[in-house]
Length: 365
View 1 (cartoon, rainbow, N blue to C red):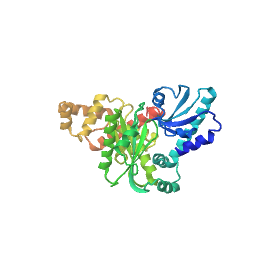
View 2: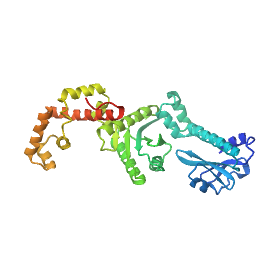
View 3: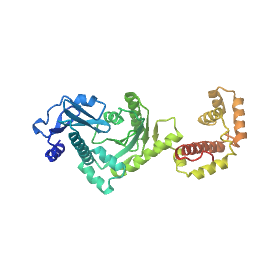
View 4: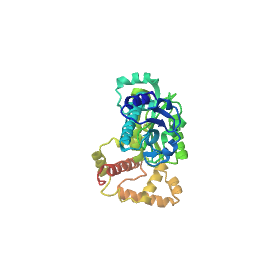
């Protein structure tokens, strides 16, 4: 409020009309007529309900100021003249800049965003943390929550209700689809607790906002300066998980398995691997039923009896299908080594297909 009022004092000699700023409840925070500070402007609700950013009511012009996509403040001027509307617009820009400056200097969320994006020098992190009363050394993990773009829904608010401790847990909105939670941990080795937190987040977003969400989890780190590493791992977990485990919603960087290894391989090397393993087009010739049979066979640890039972087919039918796969691909999935080669090949193919879709790389190997 003091910053807003200082701004008003600086410009009121230029603007000869009464003007000021109020919050979304209509409480006047700063005004050229200082006696009105703290009064309630009853027109606030009308202004907020109007679809446009600016509106004139009873000779007073109003402009909404949005913070994180929500109308947070309303500036106003007792005039509807074109010249006055220009002043109102300039005043609104100044208010937005002051709020941004205040947030960047005093907001813990902005500080955390600066840390993970590495826009704050590593040498300054400890000093800034002390100013904001944030413990520098503590076990923390980064959760990256990706949601659908949905107008009027704010995952950050749901997270804030789940983790209200603003001195230990920090929530920051990166953009319309991505929100981060930096959660302090009692025990950095408790992976079950970390994944349980992710499930709580997922359930809350599904229940309260009824939107799909995907969560990437980084490694636990022991200081603020290591948060960028946890954040990068959470991003990688989301990317790798979407390629190799698209039926899941929670992806832990420390449990990505072969997917993480394959993701780091050069595309030409992956193509060469598939060319060496399969005869031309033999992999593409496998139909959906055959792929389903293979997946079920793998899920049952290469057990023919259990696989045939789950597929509701005779044992001999399954053996016939496996023989057909051997004839087509040259791999006998009943043999452990061939089964491993095929499993890895399927993961490599998923990776290449994803690269082709996202980077314009042809799908042919």
